[in-house]
Length: 65
Image (tube, rainbow, N blue to C red):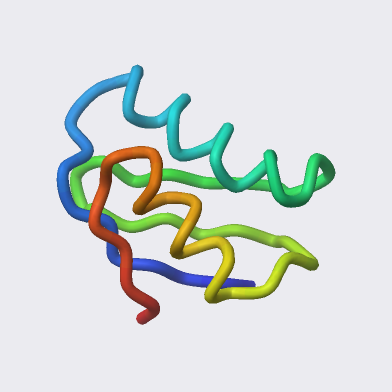
């Protein structure tokens, strides 16, 4: 399980954008976004650095927890 702190999320659109970013790397990834806590958990086979970069490319600041 990959856990990330993600800044800049605040709505359902953000949840969708982050989920699509992760699933763009691993279509089978299970993604859980907690807007209140500003965290993302992903059950994925993708490289953690690549996931962080994909979320950053989607417009959010991401770092591993």
